[in-house]
Amino acid sequence: MDGGRAVLTEQDIHQALTRISAEIAQRNPSPAKLALVGLPTRGVTLAQRIAAELHQSTGIQIPVGQIDITFHRDDLELRRPIPHVTDVPFDITDRVIILVDDVLYTGRSVRAALNALNDLGRPEAIQLATLIDRGHRRLPIAADYIGQTVPTEFADHVSVKVKEVDGRDAVEVQKA
Amino acid sequence: MSTVWKHKDLLAIRPLDPAEIGLIHDTARAFKEVLGRSIKKVPSLRGKTVINLFVEPSTRTRTSFELAAKRLSADVVSIASESSSFKKGETLKDTGLNLQAMNSDIIILRHPAAGAPQFLAERLHAGVINAGDGAHEHPTQALLDTFTILEKFGKHDAPADQKLAGLKIAIVGDIQFSRVARSNIWAMGKLGAEVTLVGPTTLLPEEFRHLGVKISHRIDDVLAEANVIMLLRIQHERQKQQLFPSLGEYISLFGLTHERFKRCRPDVMIMHPGPINRGVEIASELADGLNSVILQQVTNGLAIRMAVLYLLTGGSGPQGVKA
Image (cartoon, rainbow over all chains, first blue to last red; front, side, top):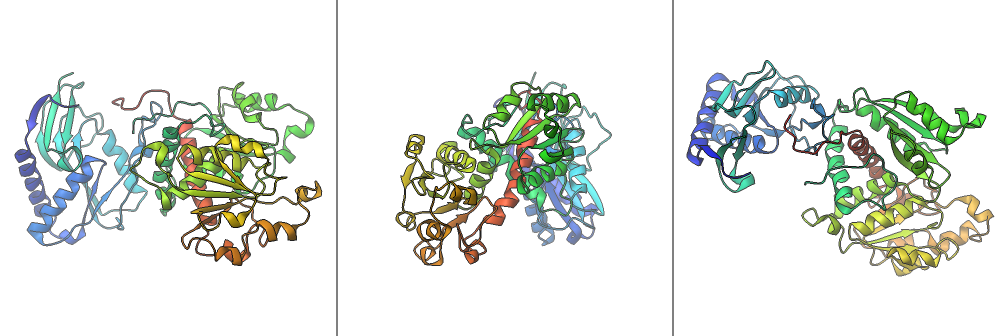
């Protein structure tokens, strides 16, 4: 889906990720313990960009993984999405995991991601970063780092575009 | 990636289109990762019931389906023919209806009669997976075999029907009685591979040409070019039927010996669906050698069966529905 109301430009996205990276560094005094885990597809891209920002500011290369949440979804009765491959090439036990998603909405994806992470080990803590918080939570879940809060109607469609996947950086809202 | 699984059953490879085979492969890739974890289990089939109904002996396939279902958190019951009501004369239809009446979601059937899974599928609401029916098909075996070949030789950016384009695959042995061969001929052909069947005339009738494959009665003609050599099990009872004169003669004409292996491509992939007759279809050391993927086939079989169970138990709604 293209078009719709642009809510973030390329510049805005860059600034939001820089700020999120700074907040992560500030809140976690020992960055060597950190690891980023993105939710496919665009959450992984955003996690890689945050890792690059943190590398610049702290000099530490923070590992990045991706976690598939398909098998832990609560809507499998409705559909069978094609799963992505989970690729977390480090032990998450005793690390501080920053879970990265592009849009925080009902919270169901994050709930599934928490369960999926649980199968891989026992992190010291899990924090949540999202580029867009669009509201309408259906579960008691909140983000620790938010790029931008965007008020939406429940039926609106929020699409995050990233250069690595879509050829351009933008966040757009299509009205229902 | 817009293909959606829309079948209640998996009965054969023949009716599938290349994109559907690709969908199963893509799904299996994610499950293969799960198998490498310390917690090898995901909750996708929680609350589902899977029945393994094996009216013909099998260790590998039955265990593979059973483990696949367990790793998806389904409840599994395995029934072997020796201990079932078949012994008391119950018909396949009645057994199926009874298993369905216990609210099972999937019935996995291995049966000596070709078409038995289809017979059952047409009469039940539950999904039916063909785990081998007579000499007809063994779809999950072909899916795991092509998955294994794709891992090494696949063109991942190619269209669905070209993923194995240009690849030369030789299937050697008892073709006529082999459901593994039939399913693989379909699967490999749909993915664009060039298949040559090799075997004695008694085990490889000319009609196979109609399936779009080449036929050879001399293994030595295909060795130098083949990227993949798949050896099929020679069943001793075939010798009693006079289909080949002696094991020694079979080995000298069709066995993959050390001497023949030297004439193969250095990167040739050697496959066997098992159980192997060491020293008959294949020299024992070659079965354990670096070119052999026989045990990888077994591991991949688990991932493929997880993928099939996952897809068959899915709802009928379109993908992309916002939760």
